Image (cartoon, rainbow over all chains, first blue to last red; front, side, top):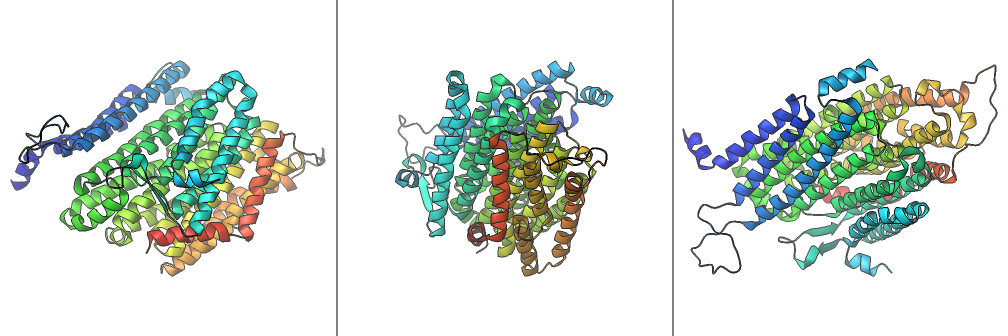
Length: 124
Length: 497
């Protein structure tokens, strides 16, 4: 029961891990290349969720210079947000690159299903 | 002359990065100058890297705070023995490969893509240099992704069905790998609150008894992530396709350098943050040793079964990566130094072999190893370089491959695990079983009906010259291995105090 309450208290971490596993499962099990790319995005976004939620404090505010901070005022850790912002750019470029390769594969094979591509290759 | 480079070490990365972005413009206005420009850039980079080597041998360590923010807040760049070693290796191999491709490229990639090919190549070189000098976890992740994307683009450069499919497979698995690495970095950041490796290590030593499961998780995330990217044996599936279908200069640099920088990153994470004791207690070290031994045996056996020359070389890389991981797993200073030394030796040998394979394909159009009878007579320079590199792979004395195997064997005795000496000897025999038939066919199997006469290779100057330089380097560092060995020993002492 104790572990249940601990998971409930930190549910974003739990959700992030579940999403990570869903992403890996999608990459491994789906034959469609587009779905594999979607799987990559789910996986990467799960990590971003983990990072963002690790820096968050309930009731905290953004640590802007314009706001007068009193000693009892909580503020969230801004570093994970900066990391995630960089990570989003990286994952965006990976996705764009992967999609452009999928377009080329579709030109060459006329399909984006892995099993059909393997069939076409084995026939040659 | 070197003061500005010494005062600002990241300038080296920035310099190559800027040059990379200029390449398409140069190609647009003066297409024939593109190769010369890339060559000049890499030549300067090699010079600067060798200056860093000189500084390191004097015992100096350069630390630089990027943007003026000191270590725990800003990104720290550290020029220590391992990073200088890798900087020199990367610059040298990239320089030779670019020299080869100045005349090989128009034959390997489509005309319109040559400028962009140089861009991707220099981007790859810059990001690899950034990866080995940074001391910041997240900065490392960003460079890992840049290396991954530009390496994929280098595979894709040739176009065609096989290369496109191999590139997609590579991109997919590389992204999964870097996702695992990022997850490990995120978990480490959550428990230590730092991103600088030195500060993470200090904090981690104090907090890790509170998180017994998390240590396991982070270690496994790093092992799987970097294992996929460095093609450690059961995770190597993308490597043969990607390395054999890529254009020749790309195969050379992918096999020679790209898989190695991930091993260096893993080495930094494991030994600087966790420490060897922890790896030993948590059985990760035993797992690495097991995977490395499996890689050495299985990689050689897969290589033996391949008839396509480039595929055979690619599987041979899987086996050679096993040696480097073996050096990491042994945990003795000499063994680790031998693993680090093998990064350099294997880079030179494999680059030489891949470039020779490209030269053979260019002159004769042969891709398969069983149709190379008597080729030593029509391409004596190429096959001579190929034979030297192949014999060095097998581990013949006076060649550089012997040195790394010798010290690896000494290291395994020092670590109290002499059975790995047997493994090294066995793998030497296996290497011989798939390299010697090629050499035998090339020089000694002659068709009785049409005896061949010795003629020189019909190759452009830059292709034969780069092959000869690589072969001479293999011999030189086989006879006088002091320089790379002393650097590798310095680096190993840093990791195993």
